[in-house]
Image: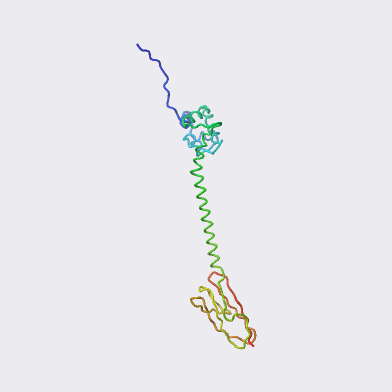
Amino acid sequence: MSVFTARPVLSEYKSIGDQLRSTRLQKNWSVVDVSNRLKVKPEYVRALEEEDYGLLPGGIYGKIFLKKYVNLLGLDYKNIVKNFIKERRVYQSGDIDVFSKKVIKRHRLVIFPKVFRNGLIVLAIITFFLYLGIYLKKITAAPNLLIIQPAGNLVQKELSMNIVGETEPESEVSINGQVVLIDKSGGFFQTIILKKGVNMIVVKAKKKYSREQTITRQILVE
């Protein structure tokens, strides 16, 4: 008759997250209970249990949270880290940071696109204000104004004079305060009556939102 020797049945290997979660549940602790005991955010506790290490602070802080949680549950920190490394087949010389790989991945997927997106937003804002500045400068700039006749100050005997000039088509032109008509090309012509002595001829041109452009002529009538 054969003799059978009883052997312990090896349970299926549990990942580090499963070990943390199952031990917590055995103690009837909620995630919030653990969060309060460790004085860390609840999402960090969930990140450890779900092995989503990209949600944890990078570098040594993730290891500190893991160690505090493992010690709180009464588990063997070194054994858990060792098993985790074997499961992932990740070997590094010296001190091993089990979070480094996922932190780098998170930086690539989250931080770089965010920086790129923010860069585009900043570029769009700069471009917008640049074009806005150019537009405002254009509509507020005084229009060009040229007085063809008289070309300068004059001395004459006649008591009248023809004022001939050019400006931008959308401008409004006035001579000594009186608005004159301009043609489609911006040209204007106006005959004014003079008096004996010095006559001041003030020609102004202005667009709707612009500054005024002013040219003055002095005509002496003998």
